[in-house]
Image 1 (cartoon, rainbow, N blue to C red):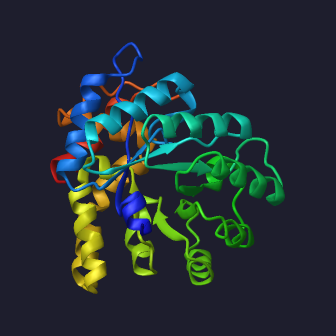
Image 2 (cartoon, helix red, strand yellow):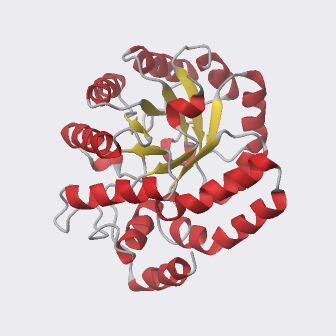
Length: 293
């Protein structure tokens, strides 16, 4: 299968709907999945950063993946975030995700302990060896504290199940270099740079703002593929206020939930500590951007 078939191209880093008392909200989850598919999302990333993965228990993550797989019912791919700073835990989560029906795995560069590149290579290979699912690496040094080097990505690309990179590093030259040296498919993980990554050859997007406007992301990507950069730039400019409100006001998961609650897709904007819901001034800014989406 092609990488596009494995993971999709217009992917969304889905938030995890919760009730006001912090429990998983099954009803809102179903509506959110239907909303994402209806607006053109062909790949849903579950239990990633936007899904508040660090606050989810293993059991909750498994339940979440299974529920999304069931609701999607083949209409989009489901990639499960399973990476942690502990290899054994990541392997167990990968196996649980496979059992729950996930189509692929998202594996972040191990965080907090800041391993050497040799340790990162061993960690990712061990997780990739644990199941038969394709793996998308997640390069996000602003959160993990450690980045994949181009040399490490080139070596990891030799693993038959490591097929893609979600790049939230923002180094377009490095991304272009790795793409030229390997068969790894790149997915932009920084909404502010969606157009730039697509223009240098990214396969697709893993977007937080896509929780709200997957259809606009699809139009942006389609314009780039057609070589219509005039239209692509216009769409990018139109999305700037919403992207700014969601990604640069406080935190993507917080603001995406607030916007989804505002338009009635999910019941509440509840998040789990250490995240806090948006203050009134952020909600006002978001409401203006959402009304013009």
